[in-house]
Length: 424
Image 1 (cartoon, helix red, strand yellow):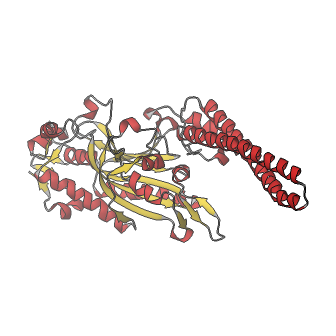
Image 2 (spheres, rainbow, N blue to C red):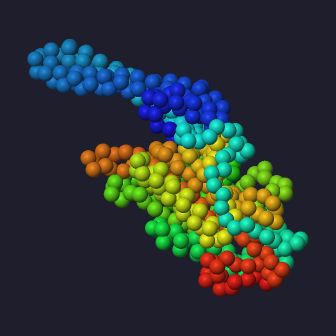
Image 3 (cartoon, helix red, strand yellow):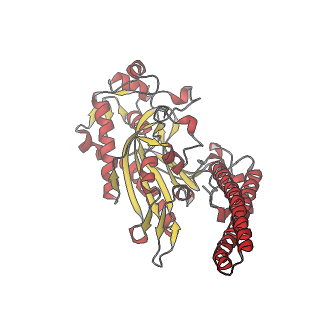
């Protein structure tokens, strides 16, 4: 969440940033934050003064009794008793202001960096770069859901039988391809210095609040109500929460973690041709990168993550483009975000396969994730994450873009992981 220091010192800048993200009621929300913070500070100041006075009077009571000034001592005791009752009221007021302040701060998104373009939606995102190989498909090229059926790779109907729509069953070489991609992505991450984590795929509410999925995305997460646990939408949630309420040594930064997990998203309201096949699922596999860094190094870390994801797509020989997201298309928590999309030649459309985000200190402030500097001061970390990569649309693009008259070609980088070079 935004820090009180930032809001109070750069109020106009914060409001402009929220408006750039098209956050409704930005002015009112920030005014409420300032009002509650003032109320909290006033109560704290008065409480501090009262406590100092209570201590002073309490110390004088014994001296008054020694001097035989019993009535004055009793009056002092009575005053201390009254002030303590008043302090309880002040403490309650301050606690309520803090709770109200926390509640509203949770509903205010992060503000974007100056380099984020203006815009209200995906159509306003800026194409930063395009790359990859041109694809020539045979006549009557098939979309991936038809290829999956033809080569018996993925059974969407069986997934509906077992669970419901959006939970496909991978079979044979389809399952092998899925596992090959997971291992390939993890190996590439380890080569780049990321330590592999195998986290839980269910988290508590505190973890959801820590990374910003709660309360913003509560309706999109699967909730186990009896135990009040949530199925993770991405490994970002459990991995980043490893560092909740932790003070790190400056020398340990940047921390680089990677994790493969299943991910679960309700995707409520998603339907139509754009969600057919693997285009949008409720359960899918993903390898995630997470970094914890110092503020002055986080932008370099962000670029290194972008280079890593681009390298994966190049090794997979897929046509891709990198988008700088505009303010209106960014996530609730990000300060700067780039999306990677691969081109589906059979569907004639771009498919998002990764978002690589810098959250500045927004998540760290929620998490109380800090580091200790050389001069023993504690500062908020910066957090970053990115998909490297999400598998469903990668699989879709690989199947569609590599189909030939004789079968589906496997990119060279994947052959050692698959154990075959063609699906026929």
